[in-house]
Length: 130
Image (cartoon, rainbow, N blue to C red; front, side, top):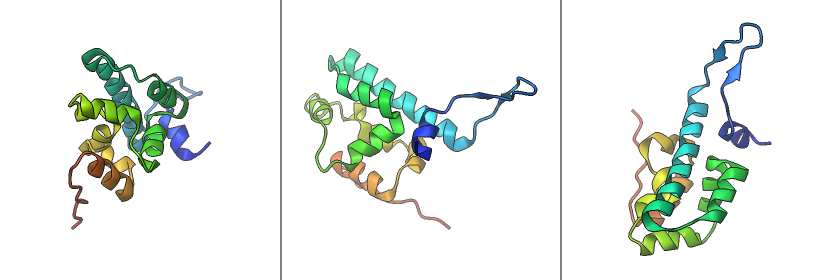
């Protein structure tokens, strides 16, 4: 497995000596929150738009939220789910919208961020350092 897949499925580990939970590194916590965000947009789309994205849920369950998002962003075309949510006027429930949330941008490359922004008709500007 790649580091991404492992991080995406990260769970709280137990210190075998003291049985005290060990804290996760900040990136792993962000990956877990992103995964939860992906599940949240699935449930919201199902409830609020009546769109049941079973293939999306399967992909997230199999690959993890981060790897699923990266796979979708690497595709030259948008997913059927993106199209359905766009037509419903609910771009806020797309993978691309979750990717562009400020807390999750650290997980993605500049190319992936540009792709997400472009699909949503937004401009993406990398933060300036300094």
